[in-house]
Length: 258
Image (cartoon, rainbow, N blue to C red; front, side, top):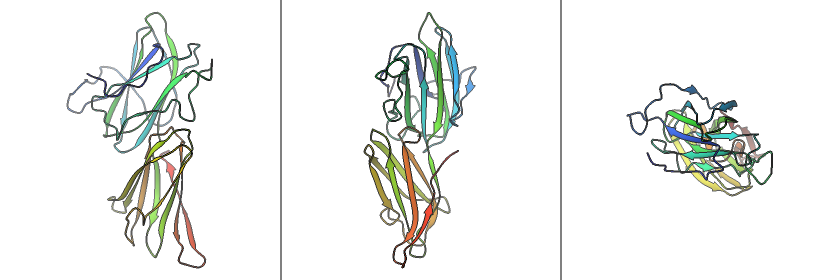
């Protein structure tokens, strides 16, 4: 099994392997024992004995974005190492190391040293995924926290009916560029439009249903995914008709999964 993506390692205290469980027996088999990790933002506290491995399985959905983070308060400075091993894991684009992206993960010892690791990605398949938390220290146990969070934002309603269009302002609030994908679906659930754009640090992307090629008289829902840390992308939307006097503007929401 070869590594398709490898995140830059830190000092080898704890190694985190991120492996997809295959649906047809490729690469790895289901471990005999494992815990369940849910992408709900809840923090798990782990103490791993020397040379030991903890295995967590999670169910991820294709086309939705997630962020996995580990942090430590132990006085080792650069304490966490992430290795991303790709068997069946196939995100849309490359999983992004966002450890140095706002909010940056820093050590409790020095603001110049990372005290953890974060990767942000879009799941390429609806499947079960295996996370291995491995202590590569053969002499001592170590503690750290891990959290898996979905970063998808959902858009309950847009419309191009009655002379209206829906307008979007998408802001990158971080110190690094982010890839953002906006998908619009009609009421039958069929994709009506999609755009993927790279937004520079602190920059704004503005678009609307007309620019995205959506015809008149259509309504539906939307979904926004990205490879920034949780909370890194803010969206403001409105259903508006500027041909009336005064202009008719109806606020539209984007909300996280939970």
